[in-house]
Length: 177
Image (cartoon, rainbow, N blue to C red):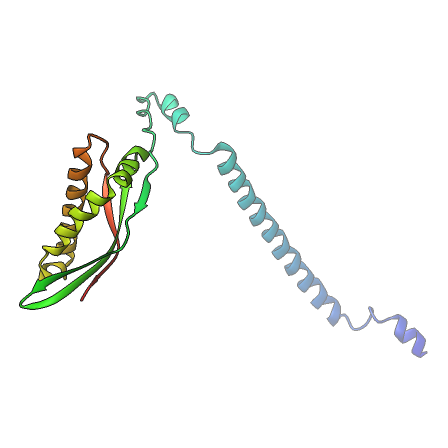
């Protein structure tokens, strides 16, 4: 008789059957919703990737003026200068500025020109840095003014050789003491 009871585990008072039916139905519903969400997301991603952002086609369909041709972006080239360590007088005491400067140009010829004229460039920058006001350099505005002065000084030296000039300079370190 124990064997018959073991075989009839699925049959009984019916309470277990109701739990299985309601739990199984909820599980299937959740699984179906999850599959639908994943398929919609995948379809949307596929449509975005395949159709892309076709601005030219959109303007032709709309009858609007075609977009202006895109300007080719130029790649900037950089050249680090050797570290500058310059002393200058401040209210009767000696102060120091230590800075790393990088030159930026869109034309490699400009950086080659700077390399050929490096002694003159460094001399001009040392003289410029030596003539600074300590209190002014402690402000962002003072540093920006110095950066513009450095750019102007470098380009003045480079233009003496009749070659290309650099477009910008950057302080990659700046220490006042």
